[in-house]
Image (cartoon, rainbow, N blue to C red; front, side):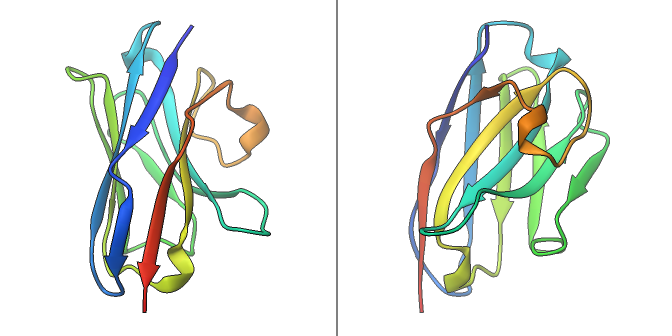
Length: 123
C-alpha cells in the first residue's frame, strides 16, 4: 500500500511562495490520481487540487485557481503543489492523498493520506 510523506511547509510572508512535495512509496505511483487538501484550525478539511496519473489533467478549487499549481514527476514518485501569492488565510496543515479512481474533490474518495505539513503565512 502507498505511504505518503509531505514536505516543504514553513513560515512565509504574505505574497510569498512555497512549493510542497509529496513523496509516495509503495504501490505503483504512476497509477495513482493525487490530490491536495488543507485544514485550517477550527475548519473542515478543504479540497485544493487534483491531478491525473499522467500529469496532463488537473482540477482546482476556485479558492486557489490561478495561485496554486499541481504537478507530478512520476520518475521521482512525487507530486508537487506550487503556491504563489500566499495569503494569511492560506495558513493550514496541507495534506496530499491518493486514489485509484480519478480526479476527485471529495476527500472520502481518497484511500491514502500523508501526515500533513504546516504552512503559516504571516501578514
